[in-house]
Image 1 (cartoon, rainbow, N blue to C red):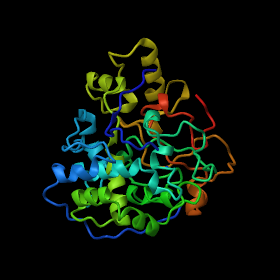
Image 2: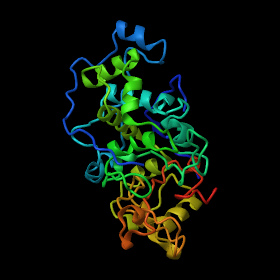
Image 3: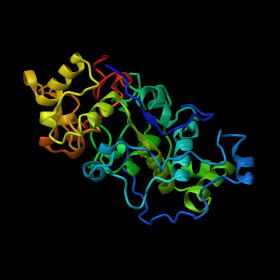
Image 4: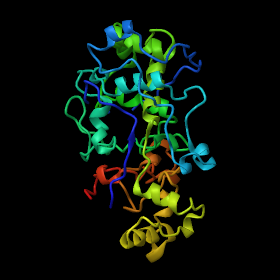
Length: 334
């Protein structure tokens, strides 16, 4: 299988480095007008710590293929009206994502459990937190997070939005072990964060809401396109009937046989019904059929509903060549 190409709208920083529900303020942020570039005075503060240029990376003008601009993709996009992706907001989110100062011991960042080289997943079966303890589940890829229409996150979908999700690992006692109050107090005095928050949100005030919004903007910018599948899908005419998916002209005979099994249900396969859309995600938690009685109840453990027992969020299949091990418990190495 050919490894897909990813638009990782993330550049390397000097830092390298992942469950409680959190209420966010409802007041929309007023984005300042002059956010196009960093001034010379800004760069004097930023460059001793961060590898940033005067012109930030362009997160807002992404060249997406036609099937990422369709009505279906638009409907699936969970970006809220009050938190659109901005260049400065996503830049701040990128800095936060790679900053181990978001953890209690200054050793664990979001990138510790979502490695860029592993398509923003964790190549370990379970992630290792600040005190060496391991998480209960595998850290799934963040790719195409913006295309989960219901906007719910984690394997058990306990986070109602991406903005809520990004704060929970920070507060988890195994993962990063911080309180939001302590995090705000830690970041507020740092002059480079004062510059970044001002550019993104209009003032230097560090708040939990702004941290959540920035991290969510950066995460939504991580989109996978231009894979061999994307090129074949476009060449095949953007077929709308997924159950009658034609062969792709750029696929080998063996790859088209795999496509036949995946989409047309040959030999009893039903891959289509969980991963059928062009972004290869699903809007509903599903039972993967691994066990009649699982020790991990998935969504059912969160909702308490018998019908939700054994249901788990369906991660995208994008870049799966590098996102192993697989499933919520990482039981499959290949």
